[in-house]
Each structure stands twice: as C-alpha cells, then as structure tokens.
Length: 91
Image (cartoon, rainbow, N blue to C red):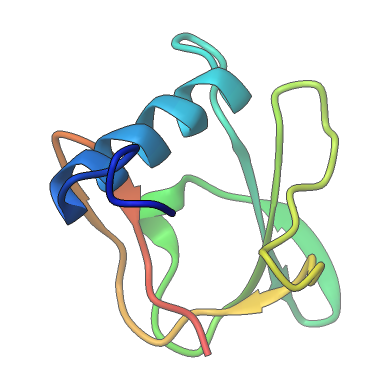
C-alpha cells in the first residue's frame, strides 16, 4: 500500500470492506460448515465456538480460503458482529 492510495489505516480498512462486499454481494450469504464427530454440518455463523473446526463457502458453494490458501479453520473465540459484518478469530 502506498500513502497516496491509502493515507491512513481507516481508508485501507474501508477499501478492504468494499472488496469483501464485491466478493460476497449483499443478499448472498456465506455458508458455514462445522465439523461434528468427523462430519461436516451446516450451521449458522453464530453457533461457532472456541475450538470448533469450520469452513466457509460462497452462496454458490465455492470454498473460501484464507490468505494462505487454507480452507479449514479452528475458531479461537465466539463470533462477534458489528456494522461491517461477522468476525471470528482463528488459530
């Protein structure tokens, strides 16, 4: 990032949030699956808890990786929500 493009961190955060909205447009929810006894079960995002293994998909059921290409995650806390969306910390 250069300073002309993103003069402060708030601008960079806003740019990332706009990009995320382009990936998952309004009205297109993500699908959350939690591993339960070795099987993947679709659950609401709010039902994830610390220690859960989970994965995310687009509404079209395409897997959503993290920046490192991982498709499975382990939650390190309960999910939170604010005006920018749902959030969860992972290991």
